[in-house]
Image (cartoon, rainbow, N blue to C red; front, side, top):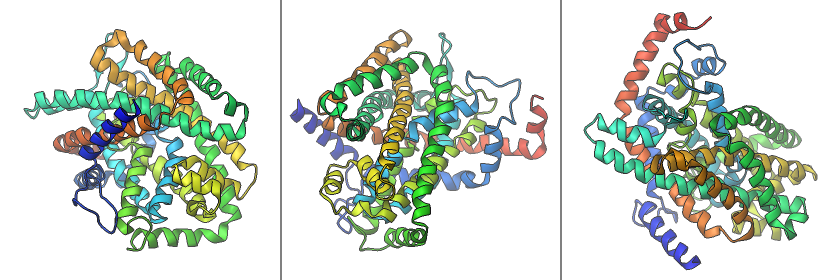
Length: 482
């Protein structure tokens, strides 16, 4: 079985991640998927007139509820949609992926993660706008959105309906497997490693951790998107603030090193002598790990935004700008500073060298916090558990929507049971190959999704221009429900 997974894994990796230079540049390969994400982000950022900068103040007003109208349609608030999507993105990726990127690509990878977050804001804006535009209200009261809806329906308006349907089914299959792997077993494996250090009982009985996590996850996801939204509305702001306070403590202790850390980040981002392949090595690691964290360009978060109560599709698209901004530009940057300032990404101890070799990013970050305050890893263990939990409940919803798209509404409970079962399975068997395989499919979501975004970008730009015109004329303010 392991050999079969390894062969399938290698097959997909060769197809989806082939080196666009058909060789190496400065010793580093440049995967097609990374280039595709950069191309899509740059193109859409210019095409939308840098909406990721110009519309942030208005976006904040929407999040605060200023533009609620009697014509809004949906089942959860724009803020609840944002926190649901953030619960999937602000997670272990912010702790583990950052450390992995820097340990493999050098300090310069942090700069490219920030750039990926900046470009990702426009990618997220575009896909969420389309998700609201083409969402479908199902008979059971739930809402179907995301790439499974805007690929077939949107491309049909361009005379490419058949192609859109095929892309939607491929996307849904990738999403189901990505949810079980990257959104589930990866979260379990990373959090289990930390919890076993903190609670020795789980070293002898790892399945107990799986059973506990499966139980509390099940309590939330069985209730559907409304229960998920209510939980994330509370837990996401709490865990982000909690984590940022921990980081500020470390930075305060090392205040004099912050300037040097930023200088090193910029220096290694553009130097040919950077770790693991120079500029291209840092760029690849930065973009690849940033996308693993913020999911911009993958279309997954657009599913969480689909149920939002809004009148204009553009409005929720603007709300989504804050996802990559909070996740990558803020939280990932703070983690990067901790890792770089404490120097843990270079190894030096048997434990760190093993963590770097096995890509246990959470362990690397934990060592960074522990080097400043000895008991910080204990608190970080709690934070990692909460991050994993919040990510899993949102990704269970993404996978369930993809499952419903393929198999129908009545079968949704089957996916939830499968999802919960894999939480326990991930604690008692080696899921390394499966995580690698599903992670490839996770990033591969960008291929059909960005293809659709590029083809439908003229429509989104038109919606944006119309919305801005109404905003400037005061029409949007007159619509507000007092």
